Image (cartoon, rainbow, N blue to C red; front, side, top):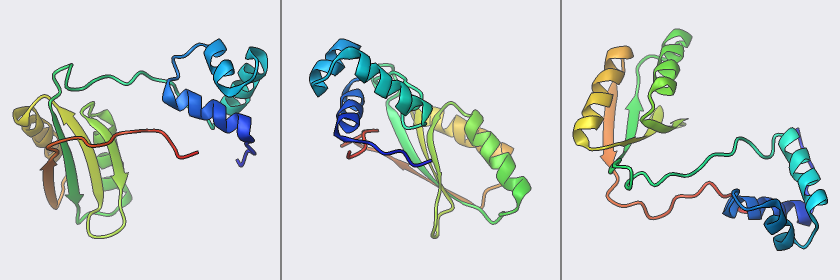
Length: 153
């Protein structure tokens, strides 16, 4: 569904992307409006599906999840049953923060956050015991340079 956004809507979305925990009063001040119209706009954007679930961003390293792996998966299986099993396995693994199906030589890429290399191996062994994969390459992120969910409004 296509929804028309005006400048005020974009300002509200920008303020929410910066910090969705801000009070409605603070957001209204930041966008140059009053509380009730801002609340109505937010409600309408939620109903339209523009604003999704609100969560809290946790600091993975502060919580002991020091290792981030990007896992490249190639499969020789492309039938619906295999895909169903694979998607179920990936969705049920809490270590998987993101999963994407790709065009090109690699079929899937996963972003996996774990405490250390040993924990990654436990994840890897569990995954390959649930679904058959042709090739898995794990890349350890040495440093996160940028991470954002913000869209360039």
